[in-house]
Length: 107
Image 1 (tube, rainbow, N blue to C red):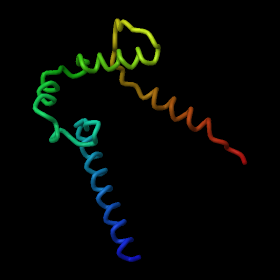
Image 2: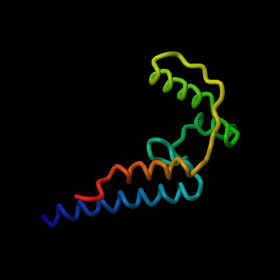
Image 3: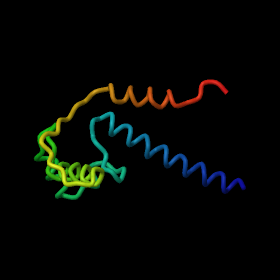
Image 4: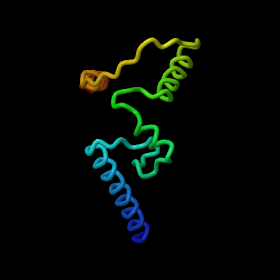
């Protein structure tokens, strides 16, 4: 039983170390990849594509992904006229309000 608990604690420590590394990367402004790894795991093609990109500009791959997602959701082929990147904390606040409003306050 003690050996099992030791193994579980070591696993938790490893996960906490990985999370601490991800938080440090995010705070440093380095975006992690979808697989949870940082830029050291990028292929040369991926790093070359992002190096040439202008900050705030949407790549062709991202535009195709947005178009495909909208097409799948709406069920028709869509023509995207404009995409603007907006950084606003209002969306996050609205999400928190919505979640908190869904909780029962009284038993």
